[in-house]
Image (cartoon, rainbow, N blue to C red; front, top):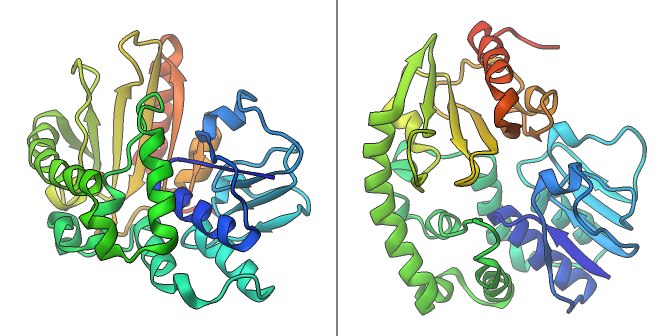
Length: 299
């Protein structure tokens, strides 16, 4: 029995909950959504997938992304919820396999994964322990895999205050604060707003800057959604597209997850992404932007 999840805060908390509920001590298998969708992930019988698209090879599956809604009944649980951790927590608490120990952790995971943030939390994440911790989680060619494993271990039995005092975590939090300041400058230089959609194009940069993904909504308050375009590697073979509804100006009607699913990606109603081959990306980006500009309500 192995936990398969994605390397973001929700995924890490999913791993914490599954380990506790099912007493799993095997290494976590960290996977990105596109690897499941492309059949690149080695999913085995007995695997428990969380916070990722469904694979028929797994034994249990838990998720909450609207674009991943299964066509038939599955073993596990699918539910539209603030986080996949929320789905797992309720599932195993109902069975008496988890108690209230992780209430605070799951509550904050819901806030972070659903982007239920206020302006102060966006501008000053260092004031909010769980939010700043979530921003230390990165995925660049799986270089941070040991760190994800460390957090899964720390969050299982340590308070958030103790976790933030751990040396590596503390250094990463300090780095995030510096990066957010630099990221703001990059956003201002490389973002334009068209039809109330902020479009940030980082393709001219050799290195894509890291930073607070919600900052754009504070910097461009007139925008109802943001689009970020970047190359996924120095080889420029693929382009990554990330879209999110503004968490402050809530007038976007487009279901982002469903839109991204049409182009091989996925996500929530309010946020999602896809990976496009560079040679064909121009037309796809044009189509996606046109849908965003129209901002039509969907059934």
